[in-house]
Image 1 (tube, rainbow, N blue to C red):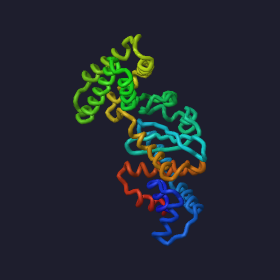
Image 2 (image 1 turned 90 degrees about the vertical axis):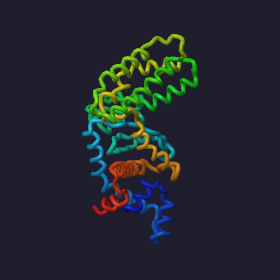
Image 3 (image 1 turned 135 degrees about the vertical axis):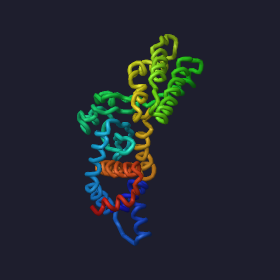
Image 4 (image 1 turned 180 degrees about the horizontal axis):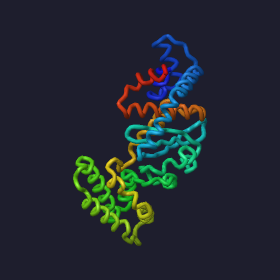
Length: 288
């Protein structure tokens, strides 16, 4: 059971190749149905761990959130994640809307500081605070810089985001130092430029400016809380494996199969974050 789980959710090997591997290495003849049954049994054993991961994140006070599309029996579904530095919780849904977050967590996200991109569903959670992904915004600015190379507003905002990231690194390296003046100065510069009239700028530039104005308070949350990252790269990594899985072994054949992967991948990614030996922990879980 643990070997099949490891091959499926850690190495993303499809059922057919798992059958071949088990036969070649261990002389075991297995059907794809047997593999599916073993994974279902492992999920049953993993559910307490899966729920503990969810609870750990909700009690941590902060999390990154992200979602990505996936194929389930030819239809588009969504894989979501809520994660932090020690835990990854993954689930699948037919929709990308706020209803999915409400169904999964109800009002439990309200005490959290959420790091994410600008997807509207996250702002509907009533979270205590938000941090927009500065890496994502920097990519948007780089695109606009290439589109409008003479637009000073774009290059200035991009430079201020770079300063914010540099300040965050210095704050993390020296957390006992008093950073109030540096943070206040940077936020004031950012506020001045975000609110600057841009009547002659391109429509794409004005659109981004309006987004920054609307969510200005969510641009520098990470400078007020040392444990909050300035970007959402952790969440992107947590669900990138779904894309790898689909490239290696194809789409999910059923909703149940997508749910199985979400549970097992949550456990495995959390083990990796805690520097645990994934296979040995799966063996222990299988014996539980």
